[in-house]
Image 1 (cartoon, one colour):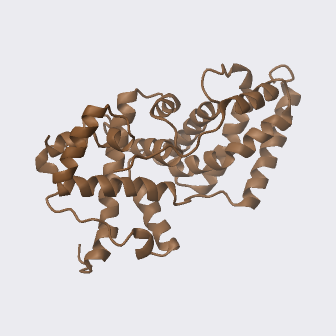
Image 2 (cartoon, chains in turn orange, cyan):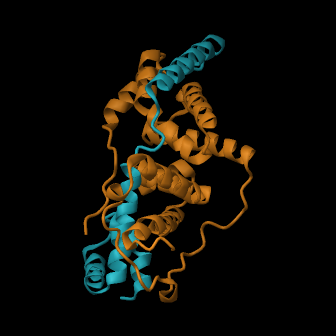
Image 3 (cartoon, chains in turn brown, purple):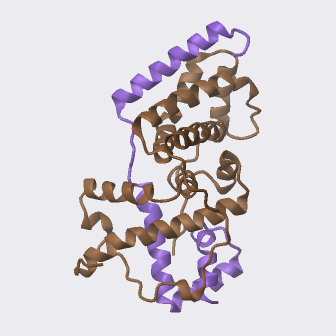
Length: 209
Length: 85
């Protein structure tokens, strides 16, 4: 079975050259960094906050904060990872202000006892893209990921949607690598399980699951 | 290998982050365990479908507006903190 490959791989040196120009006061270089990453920051922010206005604010605040703190950026990580850390913090602050979440431990050992495994699992066939039109599919995917606890959602978005490595995700979220791996496994399994209800139901045709 | 052991390694398996020996043990398990094969396959599809979904794309007009707001705030910041940037 094929493995999942990272989504984006920017050449670091070119990015660092822009960062150094921006540090020396070249605003055009900073604007190029904004251009390069604004879509990613917006997507991450909206996934975390689940609110369009908040996401717009986060994009502005994150870039402004990055601009004001460029001198403190040590260049030990990619600029993008550093920017993501700022954006995630801003987004989480907005989220907490808007709706305080139940405190549940996200980092318990994953329980995958044989008893808890599904007895009958059916494949997704035909492919979900063939079963639903684009708008329906987008709606299902949005509602499904919004149902995950924010700690799982954030790890999934950074790792699997934005293509950060495990180490970069750990760095951006200030989590340990085992915590990232454990949350990622649980996020992936929970999403799969939730999507299964949509993608399996239509295939079986009974509509009552 | 038990199904629970397979599931614990699922993320490493999908990410290609396993040594050859563990990977081959997992491949062997997948060859006979249909349930784990389906869970593995649909988890991979879950990741791919989200990656390709283009949820929350930033519309071009909003993008331009945000970038111009950011750059003008940066300019203000530079004026009031000439030494920091």
